[in-house]
Length: 120
Image 1 (cartoon, rainbow, N blue to C red):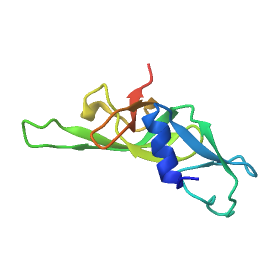
Image 2: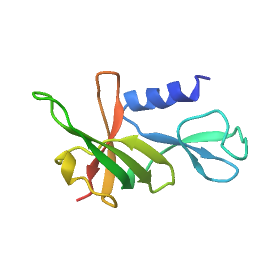
Image 3: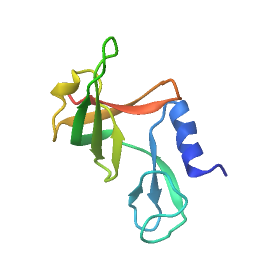
Image 4: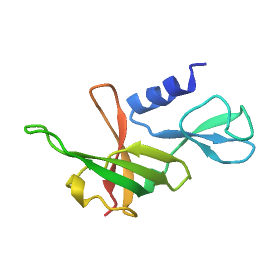
């Protein structure tokens, strides 16, 4: 069995955003790991994430032209885990705390990644 991070990346490369969920408690686990935090449970299943969440925190990273500014956001998923990513499709300064967002998988220079778009 591949390490959890490698498995997560394999799913992303296939265009799927999956999270681990504890069989015992039903709690979601992120980042991917071998044992559930707190309980040490090792029976974790990969399940599709809803992709829905809300921006917990955000900042705009200012870049020297010609590079474009971008945002870094912490997103609380409806399933419970919090991820660091970015919100795309709007200007970085328009991203707001509490904004409803939806995940999508996009290709990146270092492989596929999860980004978020404002929920419309």
